[in-house]
Length: 403
Image (cartoon, rainbow, N blue to C red; front, side, top):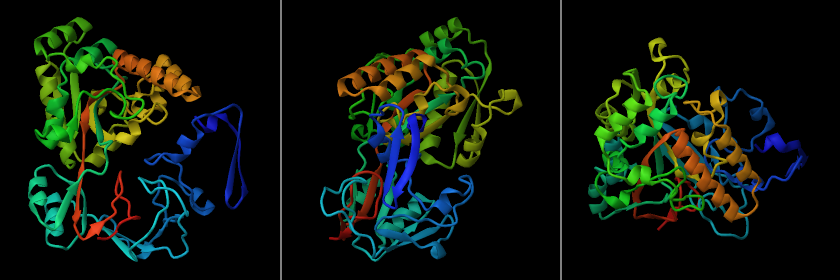
């Protein structure tokens, strides 16, 4: 969107980048400040010119730590050293990725331990200092440890969806997609991941991150009304469902998504769909979801996935509600109306108008169902009490210091 209205993007000098726009673009600061991928990353020209789908030969940043290329062990460890030439800004409040970034350690090691039980044991034994994700079943044990602290640093949580294939039957029919909304029990979906603690998840979930400016209540009765599978089955038949095979992909090497997929599978079966559950690793699912063929030819009908709450802050970033068809997010939903609302939001200059447009966009999403929201859950981290200074949001290393 930004580049579509950019007539010229030039470097005035080594420290200044200048956008020359064809028309006003109020969202320019937000576009440049996005924190999750895809985001605006500054890099040397030699790296910017490399193939983005190949492994980048080195990581170069302008922050308080340097990536130690020679110490990287693929899939196991990355190491960083304090960058002595970095100078934090002299003012401002450090929060998330904003503000001055102070490095208090000479070296940081980021270890990848695929088994969460092994990772938690290493934390308790003092072999690790910080665990980026605490699984709900291990949280009580870690909370009882006197030398550990369990905390929720990211209040935006994880957004979860059932993604349907809009190119192939039966979900190319919007009436069938709408009928299926009545079968979704968002609380059951979230409880499968985090358990019964109501503070660990949020429902009902619409199409924007709860607790943020663009979130609204429009149409949420689609998820709060009593669930009636008999009525759903009748609605699906009336919408034209004729028993077509539905292939649901579930990534079994991702515990939250596996739990979510199992609930989704049970829901679709009870709704009367002819379901074919296909388990696979997450990487295989990512590759297969790009296929647009029918299920007979190796395609798919649905999959479960999740993304950071910050990706659902506004229509500019939220790729899952786009209506851009085959050029968009897998599922390939098309909608001129949603795209028009999004363009209007990008052009709006008043917060009240932006909120009104997001309410209209949510109503349109519930009519066309580009994806099916399954709920929001919150991830906890755990760290040793010998550390302090953890910031809000996803784990970052600046600000962290000895207690």
